Each structure stands twice: as C-alpha cells, then as structure tokens.
Length: 295
Image (cartoon, rainbow, N blue to C red; front, side, top):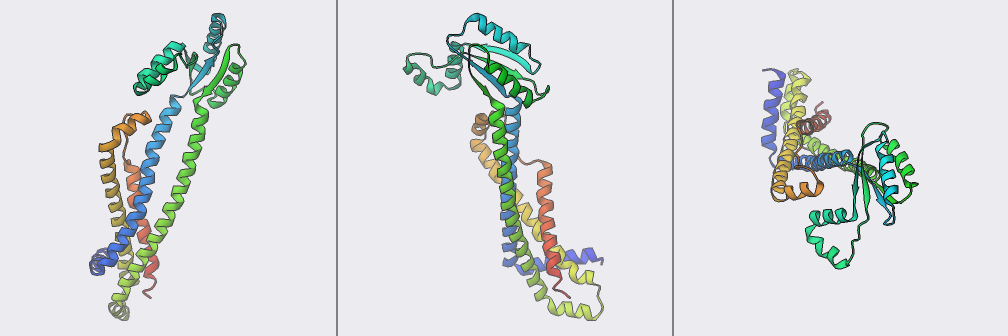
C-alpha cells in the first residue's frame, strides 16, 4: 500500500474513532468558514451594486426657479459641448413631480398635501466613463457651479466613492474576524489530531521500532487535519447555500429591487473553490504542526 493510500485509510479510521471530538472540530471550522463565506457573499453582491451604480452615475444640475429660457438654453449648449458629457436631459418641475409619484406611489399623498410643487427643475447629465473619469467630472462640476441660474449640483460619484471606501474598510474588518476564527479552528484541529496520535501511541512506538518511515507515521495525522478542514469548509458552503436559497426565495426580489439590480447572486466557482482549498489548507497545516508530536 502506498503512503498516500495508507494515510487516508488511517486518517478516516481515526476520524470515526474520534467521534465527538471530530464533530466539534468540524463544527468550529464550519463556523469560521461560514462567517468568511457570508462576508464574501455580501461583498460579491454589494460590489455588483456599486459597479452598476458607478456606471449609471449622473450629475444633476439644479436650477433656480427664476432662470430665464436663454440662460437654460445656454447652459444646455455648454454641457453638450463638453467631452466628458455623454447626454443631457432637461427635467422640468412638473416632470420631476411626475417621476416621484410614479416611483413612489405610496408617498403621493405627501406631495398632494403640500399645495405646491416642491421639486426644482434640473438638467441631468450622463457622464462618460473615459475622458479623465472623476477628475474631469469634478472640474466640470466646479465650472458649471459658476453658471447663471445654477442653484446646486449633485454628483453621484462623490458619495459613491465614500461608500466604496466604507465597503473596503468593512471587508478588511471582516477579513480580520475570519482570520481570528480560522486560527481558533486550526488550534481545534491540531488538538483533535494530537488526541488521535495519543490514542495510537503504542502502535506508533511499534512502527518506530521496526523502522517504519516517518511518512507512514506522520502522514495519517496530516491527512486527518486535511479531512477535518475540507469537511468543515464543505459544511460551511452547504449552510451558506441553504441560507442563500431561503433568503432569496423570501426576500430576493425585494432586495434586488431596492438595490436596482436584476437579481442577487451566489458565490461563484472561484470563491467556492477558494473556501474549500482554504479549509483543506488550514486543516493540513494544523495536522502538520500536530504531527510533530509523533517523534
């Protein structure tokens, strides 16, 4: 029998013998990787929303109620002539009110009770993604602010950039939390493997006396850690899939609608494989460290 086959056979027997200890170890790894997978799942969908919002970002130029037709026409001509501008659309106060009532029908009573139209007229500017990007848009917004009849400017990419920074910081925090949980899982795996080695101490002593290679002595311990980590990561992936399926069935369409995307998406093949390989790697590393007790 080859060392690989022997190691897997002995490791599987050791897992069955460990019973509750092995289940605790698998559960600890599953919790750690379920936390990591949950953060990945949220990150994937949030990033998709941000990318879509960034692509659809507009500059809204709000106008004074007293602006003259000639000033408005001159402003529109100025904007259309800019290389960073893809399209320009004038939205009157009446059109803005119609949009609000169409998008938020449940709030139509609020606008009706005011007695007058609270929305200002505006020029919506669709920006190109090339031609200098944010720098060109910032320069354009400063130049437009000085034009006659302009009361305010809202540039979506500014607050989206801040939101991207917040998401990045949240990802770093999530990575730290997941790393701490995986470290605890690795210690748990190492403890289980050490217990298995202690249970086989007489067998290992005999193998040493007859000159068995260290690969046959330590191999099962490494493979046992590998199996614990791999099974734990697979369990975590399954739990995440069940939770995702349940939540998407109950709330998926509502969440996707609020976010402005077609549908929520699950972890891709790359993220799933990374989780499984991560579990295998953590378990194998813990098993390797614990196998040094067999000297």
